[in-house]
Image 1 (cartoon, protein in one colour):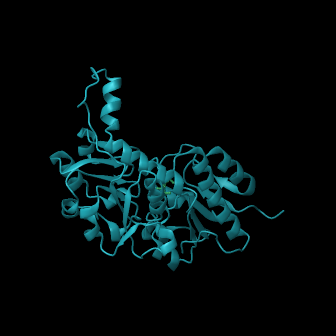
Image 2 (tube, rainbow, N blue to C red):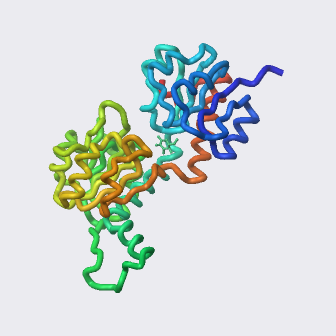
Image 3 (cartoon, protein in one colour):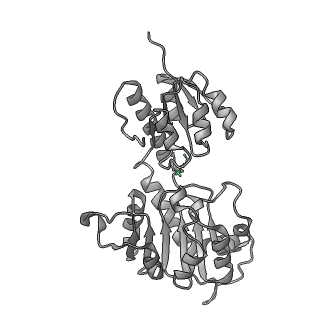
Length: 321
Ligand code: 8YV
């Protein structure tokens, strides 16, 4: 029987995924699930035919350059791939796959949770009940901002942005969007396209960030852009933390320029900007966008589909490079 390909798996995977992985491959697992250093990534890859990685693995040009020759493919357990230097992978002839589509709904659900949580003061309310500081019902107690019927701006109208829009339409929101390219008319469902994100910002009672990370969008939401938003706007981010300049956002939440924010992703996770922890008007989640049993299994299976295709000599279904 031919030898099974060796897969170096950098983080622990859901059980169902590990089961399928280990029946098809010789899997080198990270039982402790610790985040691996560049040296550990290189050492762990010794003799492996492919890597199954996650966004906590920083596959810089330097790390990719040091990978052993045995490595022939990289599959990432994520839709985002800004943690992989694609040019370096391409230069080495290493195909890279990701896991689009299967996490779209789960991530869009979290965006809506953040919008409601921020607008309706879910964190403050939860805390008041738990800490018994809630004394009595009153007509003016803990008033939030109405979401139904408001204008929502979506920065990045890819799969997840469109799924956010679909959900927001159920709240009768008027959808505005910025995207590098305008969507085909049948995908817009009435959403209003803006060729300039800066011109869209003054119309956003709510702003949802759904664009990919990377150098092009680094600190996109900065103090100047926040100033363009209407006063008391609400910002949510389910894409990548570095799209937001944390100093600018914390200052705007503190000053009251923004009513609230909802954040599932942060620069330098999990060591987030300490200012957020102090603010009552930010609803915080620990990168749970795709964190459902169904979604994480589907992401793992998709990564395996790509590895299977590669080792069968077929085209990768989700090839990034
Ligand atoms: C994942 C994500 O949970 O897929 C992505 O790009 O950001 C998340 O939803 C995370 O990357 C873990 O693999």
